[in-house]
Length: 49
Image (cartoon, rainbow, N blue to C red; front, side, top):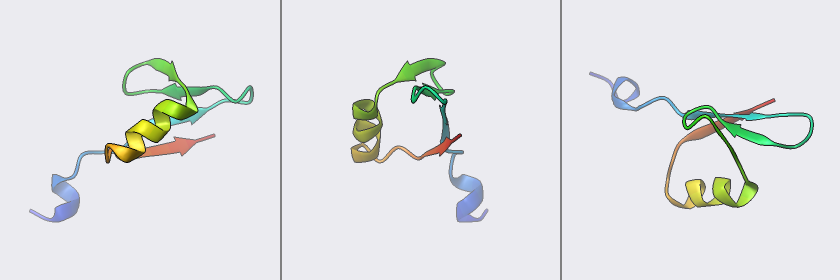
């Protein structure tokens, strides 16, 4: 099994036109501060527009 197969998929964060961020993993809106906490915790995520 390769390293890529053992990694979980990153959480998808959707950025909307009104600058709101939506976490599809938890089905909730998040703040930029929460995104910073996720980064410090080592959570993999991907922001898409």
